[in-house]
Length: 264
Image (cartoon, rainbow, N blue to C red; front, side):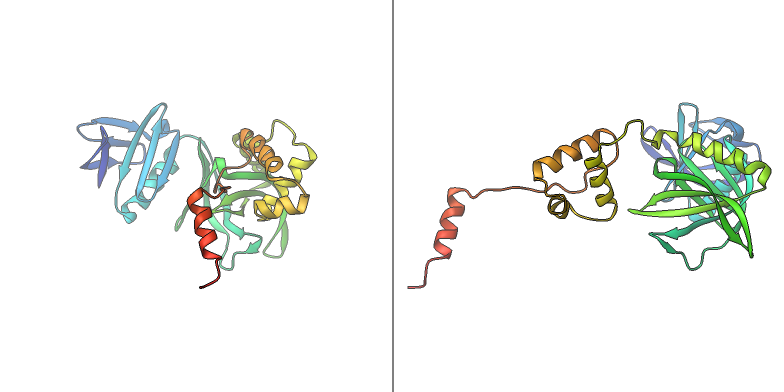
């Protein structure tokens, strides 16, 4: 069993420790003192140099230096539960509608966990949060001069829509597509938007601000606000900025009055 120097979160505090890890097990030392079977881990999340591994309802937070974190994640992701498949992937291949210049196919594995779709290769570990997936589709893509059927994953990345592709044998492609569709079904719309709200959603997607939307659709601020409220309830949008409407106080009126007086 190899050891890795880390910091563990215990009771809201970080303590230095050395964890043991092999192909089947992680040992977390005192004061946690537990053996975790890799196959019992059902979720892995990362934020900066911290990973959170989940076993049922129990979460364990581990922090370490980037090089050690890469090794630790690879072992965990290749041994944990979830749907795992050997495949080629390109992620991201398209960002904001523009081809990524250095995008290339990588040989590795795809692992679908509770909160993330992980791509793992010799050089990269890429996670697409399930909550950020906007579409799953079977499509064709040119691979070395031949049209191949691939799974296309559209996902939101720092405000832009990006696209990743997965290539695997035809016998497992449909299974992968079905599994990804099921894993991301919570992102699907259960209710339909009325035509006006649909127009607003399309204009927001195009990058138009609220004031421009009001002018484009010839609607008042209160009408657009009502549509936004409905979209918020459906989880279609989030508030990034609140526009203020103000009126002058007596002090403000006095300031303006004094400012526009002609010089004596």
